Image (cartoon, rainbow, N blue to C red; front, top):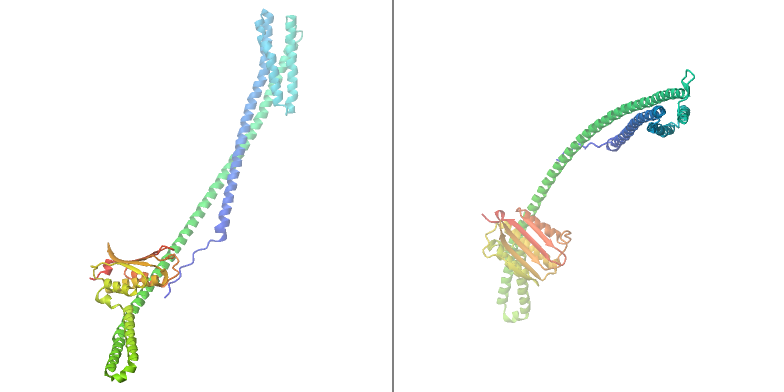
Length: 459
């Protein structure tokens, strides 16, 4: 009964295998890019706010650099007029450069803001008027007389400068505050966007985690199914291999038994018939009168030769089917006899032990057949001149080794003699042994059969 096929492995759909991971990957890339843009936007907003704060501080410092040096210049001129000491003129002389430099910086920073540009021009005119009053006082050696409640042109210019500087300071602070508030609002929006993107990224990671867990479960299920199918297939292969091995052993044993039966019948029946025919022929030749026998002598001689050849052929066939010496004298003598009778043109060297322990009959027969098949392959294919056959006990193995100096072949292809090689390998495997074949083109062939002594030696 054939085994029940395992359930089919779950096949991932196109969305699971390709589109779904790709969509999540694209979504992740989009989230990362959006987060980078948001972080950059947030950093830019923070940078703008810091730049605005720095600009506010700078503008206040520049306005102070316009107003305060004028106060110091006025005090310097008053001190000089009272004491006529040139040392008092130092702040006055430095104030001109400081004021012009500060006004130039303010006009450069606020050049793109028309509302401030006009007032900066007004402030420049007032500063020049104030300095003109101070210069006139230095030329005449006294401050101008004051005849009105406004305090004179110097005081009036200074008051206008103070008011204008205050207005500019307040307006610039208001503009900077608005920009800072806008930057803070942009920063808040960017922060909320970052939070949203982080939440989305965490959600995507969660989805990816769930998807990976699901794919991992599917992978484990698929692995379990494949392992189960593999185990069932290996079990079936092992069972079929065992069946085939048992069948091959049965066929081998059956063939040997049949060959043994044929050998007995040929030896007993055909041998008896040929021997009887030879004896009868000799009796007839002796009983015939000489004058009758003389014309038939050649026929009698040819008949005797034919019967002798038939008996020799019968003996050789019987030996090939079931070597009688194998059971009577053992494997060593059977190999020596076989090699002597089948050497042909080969130079055969043997290394056979004189004191080999008695082997079990099936093992001795298997080793003899391996030697027989190997020598047959040498005669047919190797074109060798020399063959070395050795039989020994190496550790826990009985080792039969046949080596020739023939043309060799690629052992991985086994183009010729493959059935014979398979038969030799199977004969060794019947006794849990190892069969080794080594060959290369132009380097001869080595056949080695190892059978464990526990299976080879007779009890």
